[in-house]
Image (cartoon, rainbow, N blue to C red; front, side, top):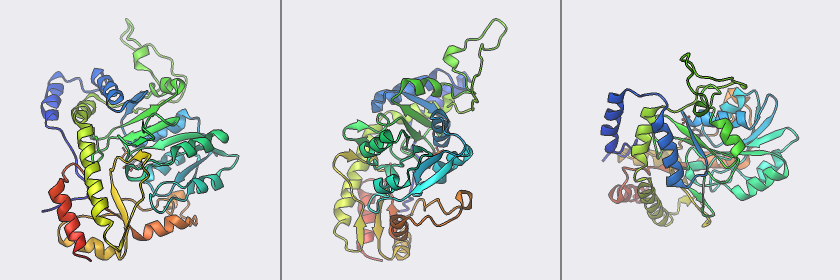
Length: 366
Ligand SMILES: Cc1ncc(COP(=O)(O)O)c(C=O)c1O
């Protein structure tokens, strides 16, 4: 049995749907993208959802629409993928790295408060592994300080917070549909917003033009007047076709993950040298990852590898990359987290039998 840390899920029906699309040759952005957006709104209960060509472009466009400019400060956790920080640099704004909570990997409220200055314009909480951050508190702090909240929900499609879907809570929520995410379109992303004003601007993700409002003229060109710098960030029809096929039984697949996570929690809680992450009962993780802390991590990884199971830290703190200044930001919990965090496989091809095999292997020790 070979158990990788990630898999790519493609619903069987995608094959015939993609073939039909290829025969139609309508590859670029069209009706199918609109259908995919409608279906996302229906399946997850999103208020407003616009698809884009990646999670990274979703984060970048959210920052642009939020009005982030050169010199502005944007607070984010160091525990994330580099995309979260690079989009800030792309706007010549300044990433300010906050500490995390040791038992979740999510941004710490105390640390956010300590990092706010008169230049802070946005906070990007990252729902590490799919577990929702403390969104009420973050939005409260943001409101008090006139700061915009952009959730990086690349790991959190289908997660809920106090019975609300992640996507309906903050100014912006950005998702990723990259190949190994819960829902893949190959590459892709989406921005959900609760604000009409933002929604109308995000709709112009094709070079700054809202296609639905710019009709072809008799001359054979669209009528438009771009009034702000635009980007080529739209999703295309074949990505949306795959997305639609993969959306069909999303909640069934998600619930399977949640069951596997419960099994892991139950069994691994009995093992002394493992410290599980902490989950509050007022929110539901989407469990893109299943992480915990472990003693003698390298030995743990090797023991699993011998049984053909991959364990991984997934991402290590990003703030020490030279592009972000390469300095030590003295993030105490982050440092502790880095030393012992690990993740074991949880994805669509993990069934009860594989989960038991993983747990049995861990029980044998390292
Ligand atoms: C936390 C986080 N944010 C953003 C991204 C970027 O998403 P994408 O690869 O769709 O651009 C990723 C990608 O894995 C991620 O893990």
